[in-house]
Length: 112
Image 1 (cartoon, rainbow, N blue to C red):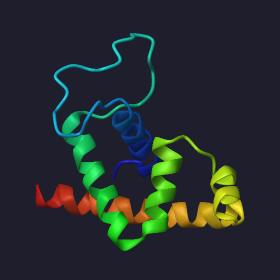
Image 2: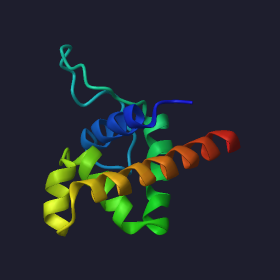
Image 3: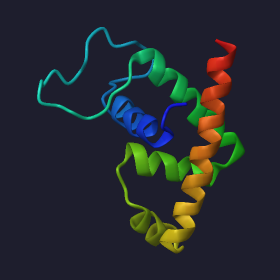
């Protein structure tokens, strides 16, 4: 099984480099050769995106935290300050959301 945190980090970079989600990229948007951020192919990115989208229906707060943390690069402490909660609470929600997404990614890959 893939490391879900690495996969979500790559998903955040992939989704942040997209101009729009309705068209597949024909080439990488960032063509800088020194860019060492983890990235996903469009196919893998869409799989993770689908799993993250399913989280929104199951746990809206977890979805918001995952998007802020992995796509927006916001720390757990900053998210906690924004929602008036302890950063440990945010980290616990994030861990639960990561586990849900990992299960969804595995389920999607089993079907395909």
